[in-house]
Image (cartoon, rainbow, N blue to C red; front, side, top):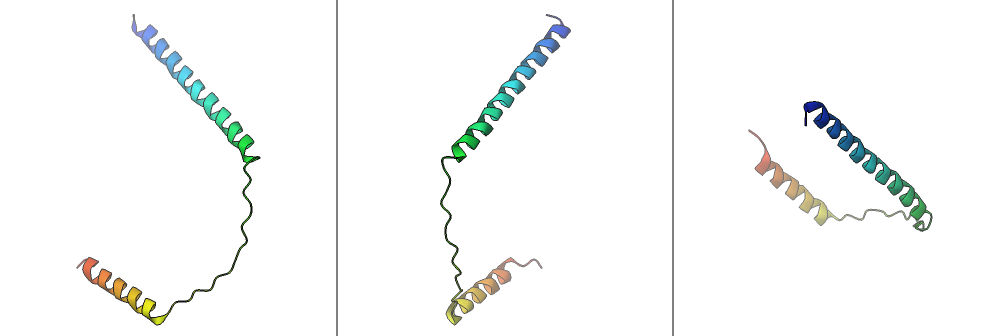
Length: 75
């Protein structure tokens, strides 16, 4: 085999692989779109929650942040 045959075979192999991947991805897009029609999730009700944070939790978080900053600051 000479170089031109090797290059031609490489191009054919590359185009075959790229075409195969393109066809597979196209089928995958259509298939997921088809399945989406059957798997519609039910909307969940939105509830407004208010944060109930007590003083002990604030103190614990503040102490943890302070300890972290003391151990991980670059001097």
